Image 1 (cartoon, rainbow, N blue to C red):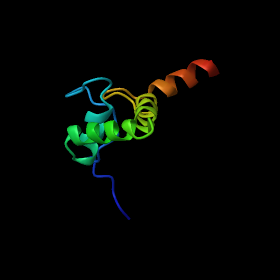
Image 2 (image 1 turned 135 degrees about the horizontal axis):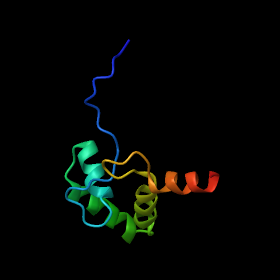
Image 3 (image 1 turned 180 degrees about the vertical axis):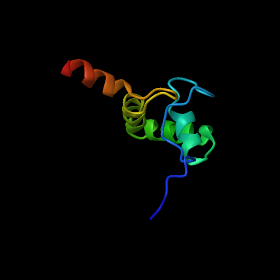
Image 4 (image 1 turned 135 degrees about the vertical axis):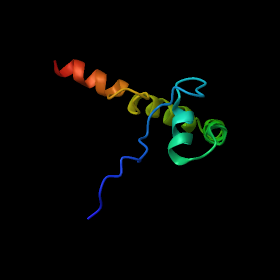
Length: 82
């Protein structure tokens, strides 16, 4: 049986080192990769078919901001249920 160590990193939009919404900085921190490489990957995906923009926007909606419990999408869904 494995125990929760408390040191696991959650996927979040970072508030440190962000340029736009913190998606690339958050992904870089979570996967221990330079955020500039993540930005480059999004740029390449955008150049070849605009997939980078769509993925970035989806991540912006789905990933909660650092220090928050809910994402933008969860907030929208919660408002419609009320």
